[in-house]
Each structure stands twice: as C-alpha cells, then as structure tokens.
Image (tube, rainbow, N blue to C red; front, side, top):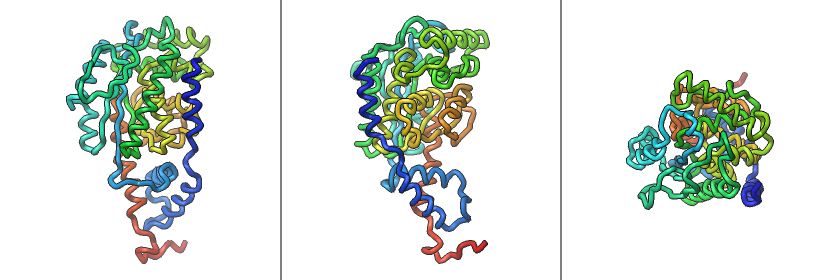
Length: 359
C-alpha cells in the first residue's frame, strides 16, 4: 500500500477522539430535567445526546448545514451493470449546477449549502462555475480485470475528502450530509459490502438504478468475480486495499471527508448505500468515527441494510428511496435540528416551576 495513503489516514486517525463521554453524561442529565416524562421524546433524546457529545454545546442558531456531492465515473460500467449510460454522471453534475435535481430542491427547502465536487467524472469541465474541481482521473479502471485505482490515485482521492472537511469547518458547518453521483457505483458498493462484512454477492447486490432481472443476475455474478479476483474470498482484511481495488474515486473522497469530519467534531449524516459503504470503510480505518455518524435513511438496496447492521446504525427514515445525491441525509437533517432545538430551548422543571413525577 502506498505510504502516502497510509500516512494520511494514520495522521487523520490520530486526530480523531471519540465523542466526549463527559458531555454525554451532562446531556443525559439535562434532558431528564426538561419538562416532559422521562424518555418521552424517544430517539430525539438519543440524537440530542449524541450531538452534544460531538459538538460539546458548540451550537449555532440556525444550524449551519452543508451537503457535499462527490461525483466520479466507474470503469465497471463497461460490463453493463447499470440501466443508465456512463454519460449520465456528467449530465447530472450539470443538472446539480443548474439547480434541477432532487437534492437541489431539498437543500433549498432546508437551507443547506450545496457543494458539488468532481473527483473523477469522465469529461473535462474546464473552468465550469459552481463546481469544485478536484479531478483525480477520468474515472476508475474496470475492477473486474484490474485494481480500480493506483496507490497514488487513492491517496489523492482521500486527500480531496480531507480538504472538503477542512473547508466545511472553515465555513462554520457543524452538520454535513455526504452524497454522491456515479453511474456504476452500486456495483462498487456491493463489492465493498461483501469485502467488509463477508456477505455473499447475492445478499449484497441490488438492482441499483433499476436494471432488468437478467442484468441483475449478471451484476451479481460480476460482484462475486470481483471479490474472488482481488481478495480470493469475499472478505478482505485492509480497508485501504478494498478502496484501491474496488474504488471508486468518489467513495474514497467520501471516506476521507468522514474521517476528517470526525476530527473537526462535525455531525456526519450518512446518505444511502454508496455513502454508507464509504462510512463503513472510514470506521474500518478509524473506529472512533462511528460515534460521529448518523444514518439518514435506509434505502431499497439490500446491501445498505447489511452495512447499517454491520455499523450498528439505526436509520432515521425508511422511505423506500434509492436515489443517492445526499437526498436521504438531507431529509434527516430537520429531525436532527429538532433534537437540538428541544435540547437547547425547552424549559426545565425548575425554571418553569413545574412539579416532577413522584412515582
């Protein structure tokens, strides 16, 4: 493994401490003093405690939210694993910048700053305004036949995510949603799921963008073959090697942003299947990242459920979505804002002069 990527993740990992246990206890005590029956706000209480332990009461009003979409192409599309042609990746990037996609609508509605990052789209955007230009390559190689990335490309893609986390912190974002765009990336996520969890290709492979039954069967066979080619079995030992062999460039960048986001003590809202694959890799690299993650939703992809179970994350929403783009994470953000507002604005029994329960 490239010493650059190893050194980068080692440096980031050393900068990550678990969310504060002292602040967690403080938050629990405060919530129990609020004017409500104990535990009556359910998971909102759990979320508030988690956020306080991450942010240590460094709240902003309103909450500064950022959505980051990482875009890249995948060489595996040559095997016919997607219902859509490869060109859709760059076409959707243009749609994001034209404010025409679902994530644009949701980001406007919920007052989140949207950032689109080109990590590896197979087209030259030149100086296109509004796009964050960080292209590493024009997509990954075909992982069915060779590793998706070189060691250098992996290190550079991880570094893009680290840089985006630093930008988010400098812009005052305390909560970030991480999404993606990349035709073929559900195949990569399925292979990553198998490599990290030991699941079979049949268990981890869904229909992605909606392929036919015949194409789905072929996609499953390809995911199986990818694992056998690179790891001998479906279970791999090194998360960096999984990233290098499978990709994609956007998944590596997302993993880098999640790692660095934790080091900046940001709440990291994970989106769907591909985003959760990146989260699983980040946690495999630095287990303390787990405490900074919130699962926005559970998608229709079977591998997504496997990864959420692997990480021990409970999704906030289950809306039968499978879009990506950060949409599920964006929809979860108002719930997290509600948890913060309840924690910071509700009266306590003492301050309101309300009697507490006696039995």
